[in-house]
Length: 92
Image (cartoon, rainbow, N blue to C red; front, side, top):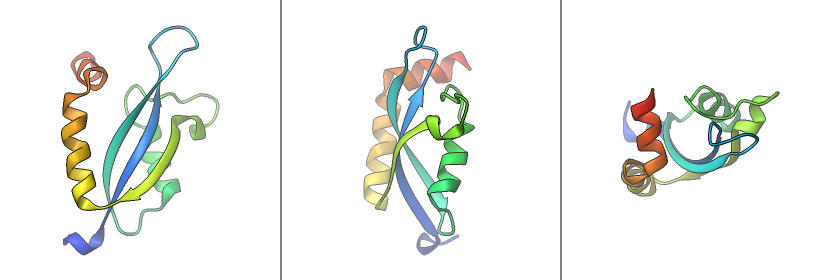
């Protein structure tokens, strides 16, 4: 796929497993094809390891917004520095 066929998203996800009835919100950055909408992004997020599922997948995500490729690339670098995500990757 060429660059014109991609969408970039900043998504704030609700992660669990940080204590009883507690959660942490973490920004994640996604690259999808241009046909994806926010409902598709919600489905992707709800399947990520560690993301809260709750009774409804809507609880998996706090916010989603379209961003540009430069913001996406910067966000992916920030994800690498995130200690919570590092621990989550090492755990799984």
